Length: 402
Image 1: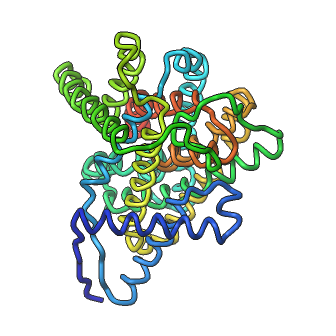
Image 2: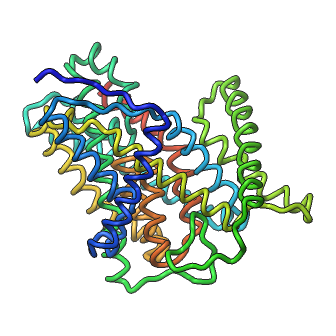
């Protein structure tokens, strides 16, 4: 079938993203298990929309291509909001758990690649494909899959490495979005865990939480101004790191700037209004992560997975099963077997098979229903952003060279 590509501009993409989000809200209200198992509204709507896009392609040959410039801005907004809500005492409390999570995550990356290689051998596929469907595409995501594709194709003879990597990362993103909530629900119910209502939400607000302060255009514009100042400084910090030979994505440096600002500016200027833990910041945070997830899901080209269906589903399915077992036996126990550990488990499912924003969305859906877990939102992004990419690169090279 001859295909036709329709490119949708930023305005149309954003409009469709908002529409799909409301479709997800409607589904969550009508389909009990979606809310019961903490499936984010953005995921409910996004997955359905991506399936409809797949049906459209197979029935008419029409491909919808979305312009995602606004999506990338929303990611920066969201992580800036995390930084602005991060108090020093929460970061200090995260010290030991941060080290524990980093250690078990590095161990998990090794296991993910060993499982991928073993599954590839069982299916009589090249071992390198096991790596692609392991930490390259799953914990690494689309960016890592694209970055490693030329070497896997040229040096290791993997035909279609780019397509396999992108398809694996895409399928992993869907699985990660759907696993986190049910895992957390199982752990919460089995161990009778709940959040401490005296804690504050680091991301968004509870579903039943009333606005503590009036939301006006003035305080909302104030939040946006602080966001933009942090983003400008974050861009400068990114350039400075690059000159020192260390490359971080913009959302990481904006997270750092937000954390520094929120722990210094209010003390230096106590009379200055500050957006941390305000209704306006919560609204902008929820808006950013919800639309980011929706736009990521509707932009997925599921037909690229369909063409590689059989082995791909088996390989990703094995990884998903291993991840669930690892989370239950290792992550939950190592992180303390408490409510925060259960929230981190939801996030671990998100980034180990999908991406950091997916992890945050999973955790946010849990905390909105069951109570805050502020330290989890500091610990997990730091592990994902600062350590995993570097560790993963060395581990991938180790397996390719062995």
